[in-house]
Image (cartoon, rainbow, N blue to C red; front, side):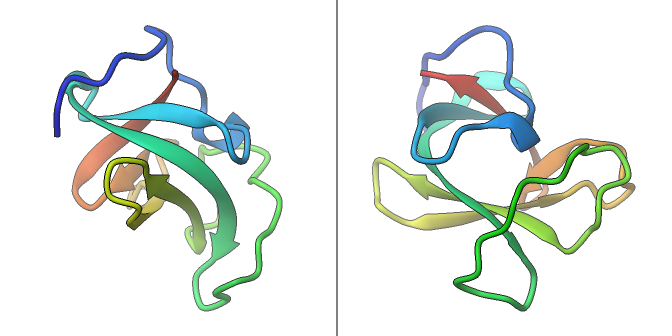
Length: 101
């Protein structure tokens, strides 16, 4: 990871635009940023079937996942719901926020 510039204000994960590029900051820190391309929303267990984003993140269905492509490596990353349904999304154990490039 490296410093990844992007808009100071984050875009809500459910309002990111498919195919647009964002800097995904981990734990609210631009020094822990990954440049990503938004691939779309899916539900766990339904690979290849893209769906509309949830209307809200707080209390969303925990089976929703957001797929993004790491622009640097081409790897597909899976962003999941906050285990407490508090409205945040996570990449592994790290909170992810999306900042328009």
